[in-house]
Image 1 (cartoon, each protein chain N blue to C red):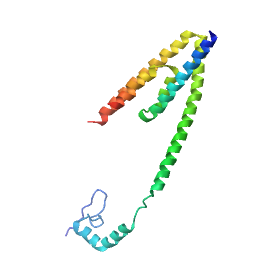
Image 2 (cartoon, rainbow over the protein chains, first blue to last red):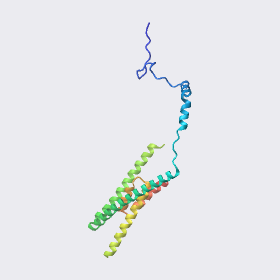
Image 3 (cartoon, chains in turn blue, purple):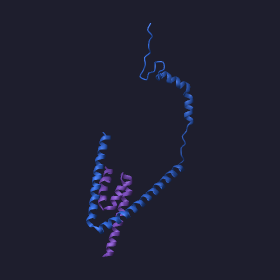
Image 4 (spheres, rainbow over the protein chains, first blue to last red):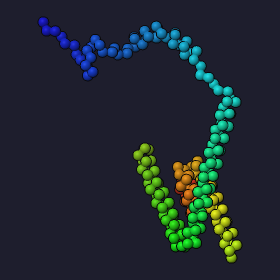
Length: 130
Length: 62
């Protein structure tokens, strides 16, 4: 008599060792055994709801941090501004053509940059939208 | 003539700084490149404002 070789699945497990699929009867059994305990556990877990004062303090703190960061950035911008404007004044006094060349270069560079950017945006939009 | 030159330069510098500051603070909420707008605003007037209006503001309105 030929011995029947059990079928093996892709993972190489035999039929016996294979994990049984979830069936409605098994889930009913599970709920019968542990359903009440799970429900009582769920009802006891209550996430803490923060008080209104705590939320207001959070908002105030965030506003203060944002304001401080903005003033710091503006201070850096004004320092940079003084350097840039001072450099432009010196350039203007030294060579007016160089000054105009810088101005034209700045406009051209900005137009090219934003054209390239808008093209990228359009490509991304067409890629991700219907 | 020198006094006029100094006053003109000071006024231009102040104008550029104000433009740059406004561009920076406004573009922080509406654009991805606030520093770019701010630096361009330090170099020229009023081109950055015009471009900002058309590129960022009108686009956002749409």
